[in-house]
Structure formats: structure tokens, C-alpha cells
Image 1 (cartoon, helix red, strand yellow):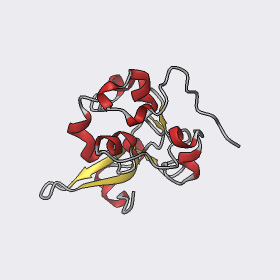
Image 2: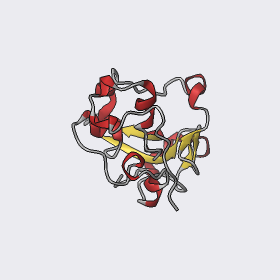
Image 3: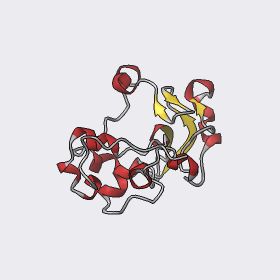
Length: 154
């Protein structure tokens, strides 16, 4: 069953335009709802290499793969990054390789499973590109054990 993505107020194929020209609504619509950016990451102090873990931010809803307090997230998680066209260049390296914001910043196209391409808000989940059902909330796993939950392929 197809779940059409509402396109009211969005220009056709707006994602093919420069990031800086997008309206706030278009910018938000780029998010595919995978939840990968809400996974806690570990950085190797010597190499700078970044590792994603199965440990999710306390605000991530594991079923919807969306932030449970999106509008107020900075109140609950002060270190949460508010991604904008101006900040994407500073943080793209730690975004998942499948992230629309990172892909477009790097000049790459959106994948076929992206909801803006498929028209189906569930396509990211159907394609196995979301974290639905396999994360562990950060408050359930001591930080010293996060290394045990590194994801090899994301």
C-alpha cells in the first residue's frame, strides 16, 4: 500500500536545487525518516574514525524512527545538532552515508527508496534503510559498553 507524501507548498524536484535555496519546509522534507543520525557515534581519538552504534538518542522513537521531541530536542539533548544549509558542511562527515542532506551536499542523487522519490513514506523502512526495531536506548546501556554495539555496515 502506498502512503503518498504530501507535496503541498513544495516545489517540484526541489531537492535538485541548491541547498541554500530551499525553504525551511523543503529542508525538513529532505529527511527520509531513517533515524540513523540519531544513533550515538564513537570517535577513535587517534585516527578520528567515526563508528555508529546501535545505541540511540533517548528521544528517538524506535518505531517511527523520528524524534519524539523534535521541536524541543535541544532542551532535552543540548548537544543535538540542528542541521541547516549553513551547518551541513561542518557536520556532513558524521551523517550516515545514505542521508539525503549529506548526499545532496556531496552532489549525489537521492536513492530510489527515498520517500521524495518513491512517494511512499514507508519506502525507507521497506528498503531496510532505517533503524526501525533494532536500536537500544542510550539510558539502557552504560556508555562504557557502547563499543560492544558498534555497527559494522551502515
